[in-house]
Length: 249
Image (cartoon, rainbow, N blue to C red):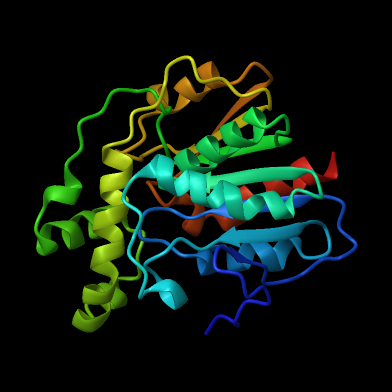
């Protein structure tokens, strides 16, 4: 079982405080995901950088809170929580829904005259790519089937009816947040963006992931790995190598 977080704040989990670090990585979970998804990243980078994982409402220790089903409102709340952590240069990493939240939070930092050093977006098409998804309108069985297709959740968890019931409100709310979000084509960050994806991800076609390039005025990198939507759980070493290389520069 994952250790309890050191940070007791509602929004940020700091599993391995690194007081000597000179940079900070903030990790944003996918739809239905929680801060503990990034516990291995925090463990791997401990001492090298200070890692924070965002905890959205409606899951784990915040399960009693209603899910925020509007992505821009969620970004507003996360931005307010992270402003107190901007004492070190910030790098953001977001997977799937987390990529969009990270992008919107980065925009908010730039609006107040700050900014982040780098944005890593994973498993998500560019924010302004048109899409028509209606997973949040499915019945409970339909949502569970969609999660199975994405292979992002341990199958044994999906076979546990009580756990599934606990997860469904957060999943439905997150899917609604993502599916009703429409990014602005002219929204451009000043920081570099690195887009990562699996080569067999049906929810993030390669040409649509490349569209992130239009949302930075700085450098853009595109990295493709073997795998589907959750390629990063089957090949964690590849993703960690990308992050380590970034922080070693």
